[in-house]
Length: 432
Image (tube, rainbow, N blue to C red; front, top):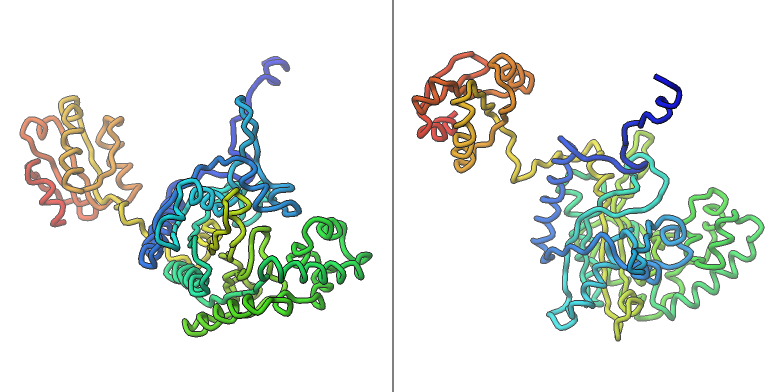
């Protein structure tokens, strides 16, 4: 092969960095979790919604906010030939609110409550349990400012995680108040950081110009130390905000949900107001560290940012599904509509192959799932596949059986076998 030919030889394609194929048991893990989460959500009164993976870019830029990592560095955007500026959704909330406004759901009984699952996209640094295409399960309640709805969302999210196997869950919670409270708080917070400007890392000095609240969420050790003495949002809450937050905590206490107030918790998106929370698993790592597996909060001003004529109070939560299903406590929830076949169908000869699909259809209608290798021709090859897959029973359908409308059912563990008429086959297999 010449050097030119070597250069032209194409390397096999791979998935983009931070994205991967989901198949086999991992696929069923996702499906099992979604079914359990959906079941819990329905019991709490949520109903399904699915919004487009692509939205207009300004749905996110005007709501998530400048100064956030998502808008500044992580969004996947594209410009269409028709001149549209679109973005792959980096989260579900803004799209859900956009749908609520677009379809006039303000006229329905409030709150309107949704659950939503599917892929989201962020050009983040890939690491364990974190991908650039990842999966979230969200619940949202739109149209009510009542504190009991905050508690409902937190309780439903906790229940989903507990039903999936999580233990030792606590809620980190804070209130960042309404516009008036936050204006006063941000002014004091900014003055505090200006006194420590020389000690702040460059990224946090930049955040001070655009979104000072994000500094509270910094993971830099120097900033964490500075944040220990930073003013807290709760001290700057108006009387109505304090009342709302106090009621949320009372509901959590009544529900027996352990919580701790975290003054540095602001969440990473600019649209949050009032209650913000994260659900933490304690002692989740080998070193005894904690793991954040869900989070959310209230976003009462999001609707106006999307062009609504009036404010629409709302609250929601999001679960990082990729992170959940890799945990050792995850129950490996079996999907309800997927039955692992216990029967392997083997066919031999052209006459049998011609009739094989009809036999498989009889079994399908009888709800008997099977594995098969219709593309194979020899008995030894098909038996070897069945043994490798550790399938308990095989159906052998040869020329003689095709003429007599029967099959041979073999017990793979004892090697015993019995001839069964096709019309009685499904009944016989169900008894096995």
